[in-house]
Length: 403
Image (cartoon, rainbow, N blue to C red; front, side, top):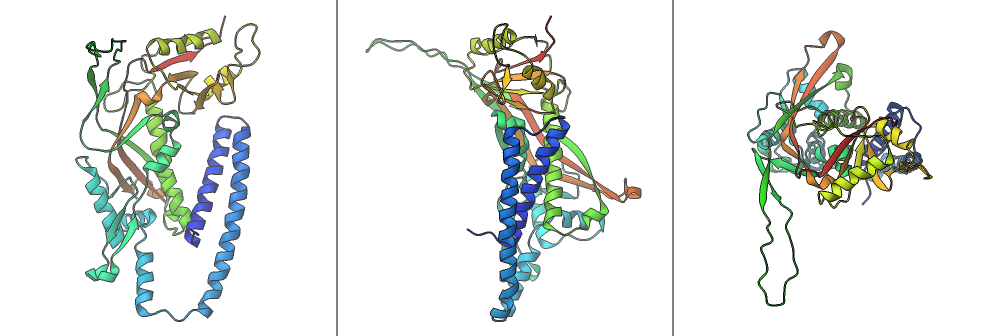
């Protein structure tokens, strides 16, 4: 299906955001782009060039069409006005709060859907947004039938998962949760060879639970009032991306931390004291996973400094080649994130971890605190929890210098 001009501009903007993010990540890690990153960057350039050509061709065609088309009827014009009016704009909602104006019908419907999705969460902001992509029906002024159309909701979960190292590692996602959740865990059973007609022994399978409960994750972004006044697709996508980025960074900085603080998920490195100084130590950590009957597949998640240390670590005295090569630790896929401090490493089967999400997004728009800077502060409240479902499924340690 061919894209319209708005969809083409959106696609171009998303590609540009992806390219910028790739370059900024490399800069933050003080390195050049990897071969794969450079290849993807070249692909993005080619895709943008192709989309821009398609957009120009479409716009040229649209500019010619008014001379060929018959005049639109009043009903057609009304329908087009309603379609444009019913496209939800986050920037438009923020502008309404800043200027003390009433929300339009679409924004009211969006906020109402967000409130319904909260289901027990405490929302203090002026704007609540649902987090998953679906549709709602918006009734126009006067409640006339031809004013009733569908509009896409604000989608956060898919772009959020695209940004999380946890998602790449294989963590399970549970969304739309309500209240505390007891996640069932099955123990390792036993099996035995039996005679053809003998009674089979009990498999000794037992069940336990891991409790997931919502913790409020709160973060802020500062946006200039001049930016809020923008009404372009690029500006709309930019503020949405900023919100997703803020949630992703705060969430993973906590999960990949070493704190055990009330009111937030326990950091995966909490209580971690193991250290590794050579390849033999790394092999021993993987052996611990196998002895704990964690069958995998394994993945490594590590800090940029740990990655750098492993790139300079050889595989034993007489070995050729380094521990970290081709985005893998001795052939096991590895992910690096700047949200892990020090030289920390976590390895295991991430399918035994779960990230739970509750409610929608609560936005508190504050036009006063930074008024002298002509800025608006937006506080973003979301609810998450993270748990390792099985003891020993993830091994954590730090890289230290050898003797």
